[in-house]
Image (cartoon, rainbow, N blue to C red; front, side, top):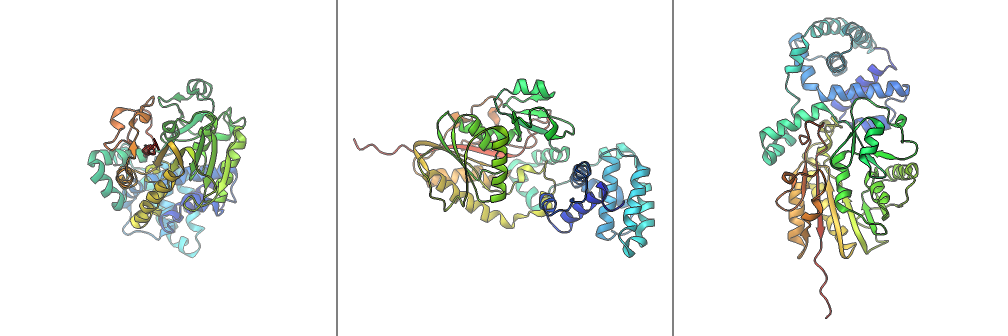
Length: 431
């Protein structure tokens, strides 16, 4: 594995996640793959994702051939090699050769382990593909698995773990709302909720309609939040915590007068770039949603609140390694404060859509139940959830919408999401 190759890049990314507890996105933003060509960068990311989704399975294949765990850099090389052989079906001889070369490239440490890597991978590669396929999906970390088991039960949790292992297809939101036409044009599937799904590896920027802004990438579950809000032309709509901007684009495409706010300047720059590419307009603001006081009296507010992001593990398999339960209490308190702030920005008769890409009830069902108890007259609008493709079983007791990765297994799943539409009580009349 020569330095500056896709394989070496993948090994560095995996090591950064498992040992450094740094997300793939943060590593890449810091230049982890800067020396690679665009094609090799894409391949390195794909290899790293495949390895992280299958760490438990790669270790199960390696374990019989190791008397003790090797040093972390050597173990990362072994893991990536096994994933490449069994996930990507790469020819074993080439993978083994590159892994040995990469091990020697570790210097004095690697020279002592090159022979072991060669022997171990040759034996591992002889494992029947059926044995790999029979291995169970990787379990979620204990802090998360326990919470999901309590909330949704053992079978649902295991189904979510299986969905995480399968990864995520590419979902697009059509600018004109015509999913059937876009699906026909791109050879995808029009989903019942209005998104278009593509399977297999694709180069997004090379797809027809990208440069002209005919669509944007957005998971089908995430796209439902703006559809629940159902903006009408000319309505003043505030998109709180707006980046990376998929929902902003949906609101603007519907003809609303959109103000998009986010705390992050760089992330808001991405929103502006996407608006420009799609030929859409919105006011963009970089500010703290809790302290910003520039405008009030919105017809609707869409709050996609900061959360644990546990609903996105199928596309971000690094997340269980870089997050834990430590920040959960703070996030729940922040979400509660943001709900209260968002409600205060509504005009009389307005509506708030609250959403989180979380699988945890404390960031969804319980959060909305608490808001309903905290605000006299606040109601959850169940009628807003009656959308094409939304199944009745997804509606929760308090009047929200619970989406999970194990839903739509025959279609490739969806991100975990929670969405609720809240309407304050009308102000009392003076008459």
